[in-house]
Amino acid sequence: MSCQACGSRALHFDDEVLCLLCTNCGNVVESNQSALDFSMITEKGTGTNFGMGRTLHNQSSTLVARSGRYLSGDTKEARWMKNLEVAKSFLAAVTRNMRQSPCTERAQYIMEQAMRKGKFRWGQGAERVAGASICIALRESGKAESTREVAVHIQCRQDYLARTYRRVATLLGTKIEPMDPALLVSQIWNHIQECLTSSTSPSFPTELSNFLSDLTSVSQTIIDLAHQLSNLTLRVSLTQGRQASLVACALLMVSLSGVAGKPIPKPRVLASVLGERFGGAARGISDRVREIERLIEDWRHELPWADTDLPANSRKRTIKIASWIKDVVNFKDALWFKQIEAVAHAHYSPSVEDESESDEDDTSSRTGSYCTTGSKRSNGTQITSGSKRPCLDRGYHDSGRPRAYVVEHSRRRSSPQTAILASLLNPFSFSPTSAPLTLDLAQEALQSSDNIADEDLFEEGELEGFIRSENDVNALRARWEEEGRFEGVPEWTDEPQEVPSETVSMRDILDSFNPDVEEVIGSWRDASPMGFSDNGSYFYDD
Image (cartoon, rainbow, N blue to C red; front, top):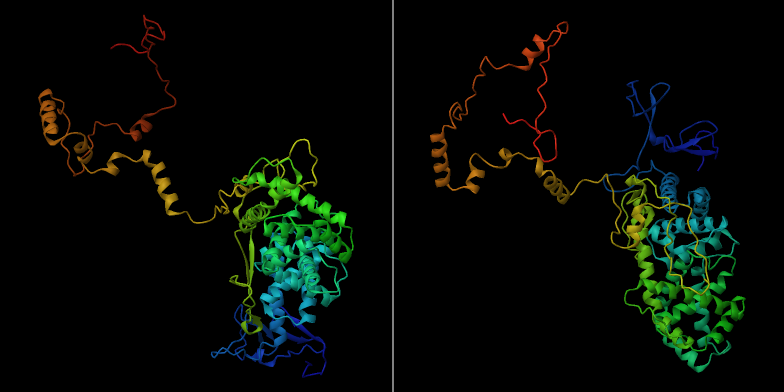
């Protein structure tokens, strides 16, 4: 697009006026956004005056006709820039919730380049591009890109995010090797399936081949279990300083055992084939498998139905652990997911509906441009605990056996609410700014019931009717009248009574006070002849 006045292509989109301006002559390229205002008076907030009543009206939203058609006043480039700003705000909210704010600017730049080169449409596809950009920015900063954690924060499936990650990395020519083993699990499983069907690939033993063939029908379950296990093992130093492909091979082998519910027959043969294909030794894969199994063995204590005693025989021990893998991993992943759900979620939807895509592969709901709900920052809880944050995957230390992994403690301190969330007793975050519930109001009313007077609760004579019958009341009243207890007591009337003049008011006391006159205090009375012992009375008997 070029300027109609001077023909220059140096156009600039101004965020304040939300239209394209020519940097050469200053002309407004979108002519229908400028209008002549002959009143010479512009109210506050309607626009900015230019010369003889020419006013450039600011637009805060897209021009839409009654029929739903977008008017030409908002060009395609302008709508694209608006959606980009919304997507950047969504990305910044996700990185803030993940506590990875330093990589926000780099991730936003990667997302913008990917959206321009890949021609992605706005919508759920742009969400996954934002998640992939966060993963790439984390990897460039030397951190492990946890695709499952990012997928939970942007509320999409992990395999779709991994697919978008590979596409964006190829599109931008990223040469950094991924550190998250979950990105390599699908590739390794495809290689195993090719070895089963291809005649040129190395053949497996019959027992191993039958074992793997029976699991081809549950491929998605195997990959999902490997992704869950990969996310849980990122909390410990299982992948630091080690080749990600070997760790991915070990994760897949453990997932195969977990889905089948029994150990893999001939595991060394499978480890050697995978090591030869992905560049590693079979011993390295076997060591990673033993470390993961030891980690699951520690997690088993958190399952109430799991046996605490393991057989001493190594083969029986392996069979027992294989029967726990799926339950243990699902339990730990559900616990981790509850903790993430208690943290904020950033929701995103493009501002222009015709530029968005509605894929059926993601069922998450989108409301608003971007917002944060359930955030821990909004509850006003201050971090005061002096203890370190408990790791999510903390297991039980068995005496006499060295640990195969080192738990990474976070530098942040935790609030008492974190321990409640970890126990799954209260998985929902508490917000003191929320409106009180009816149950809370009823509880407060019950707690303050001791301060309510009897006159506010009962009508006249109602409380006495609960204690005594009418005959008892009449008999008691007649007895008191005979004893003269009602002498000098006026009858109860609803009419106001005049206060006698003899009554001394507080105003009279203040008026009669003279500070110049010395107050005379009477003499003290003698002490009691009984003294002030514990058994005697402290008062005189008048």
